Length: 175
Image (cartoon, rainbow, N blue to C red):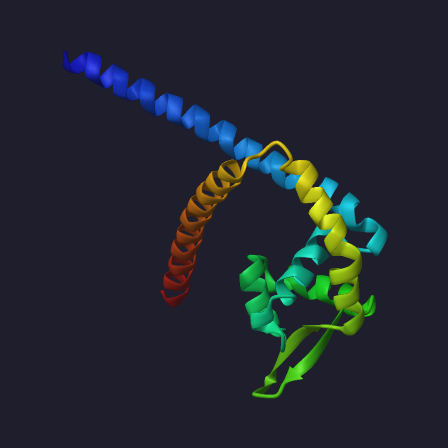
């Protein structure tokens, strides 16, 4: 009896790992397709999905006065190094400006320019909404809600792993 239980448990664990592999591979494919098809949706405005994400982050009313590069990197979950190059290109294109933080002169804030806001609100938003409509056209509100719920659970677990790895790195650095 015990051997049958162990086999059933092993089979369930194997099945879960197989499903996990398929899930993460599909997430990988979705990320790649988001980059490819999302960029195509906004390329006429001179944007990529990464720039779309930056403008989206900066368009939130809570950050109307801008965000530090570090805060923006944390919000987007990218490295400061990757973000710095992206911000430089966006600054060159007139979408964002990098200005000293009046509260802390050592810090710099990334803000959306008037031109960037026009690109975001007038040119890109209609295309982004159309893109969402095409991608999620056969999803019900419940489908979207459940998908978002599970993606947030995965993201929270990944953040916990990342935070643990950062803690391990810091502990190793202290040795």
